[in-house]
Image 1 (cartoon, rainbow, N blue to C red):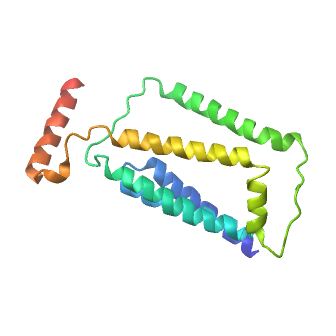
Image 2: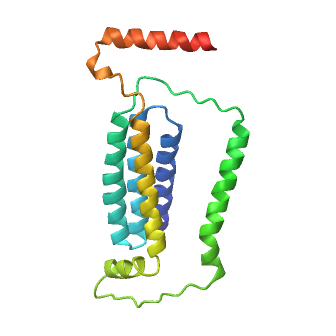
Image 3: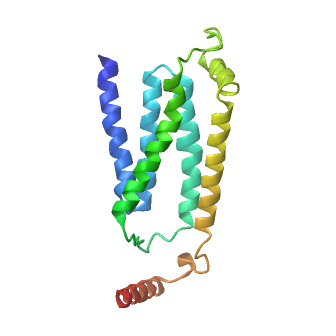
Length: 193
């Protein structure tokens, strides 16, 4: 009974944190709720007695990845508003959904197509850490390497995005200059419309 109640509570908290991440305009709120959502995901691992994966979730994602994103966000101008101009949002939504569905089908198809059995015995004397290491670096080595490549691509993309518009620094300007610059940008945006 305890597990069911904990699962429901952590499910609601996780979904609400990731909803805040997606729906907020404030970068600080998005980063904070993303970190909280990742911590709540680790609670699911602890509920499943996968202590190693729960600890890795907290240390790797909430620690290292969030620190990387925090450094990346320091390079962005949080004062200016970003307005996306999508000509056909329904088409973008439809294509995104189709791509997500294809990815899910591709990843689930091998699991559904065969009866999975553990190739290696479980060693209770070593704990689940040794078993995870053996399986991760033998049976799932390709998936592990693909995840590493995706993280590398995300990091390079963050660096490229952070490098844009670095010719002006708000930290070296006075408040009056920043206010005047924002007023000029808003006035130029109104003229474009």
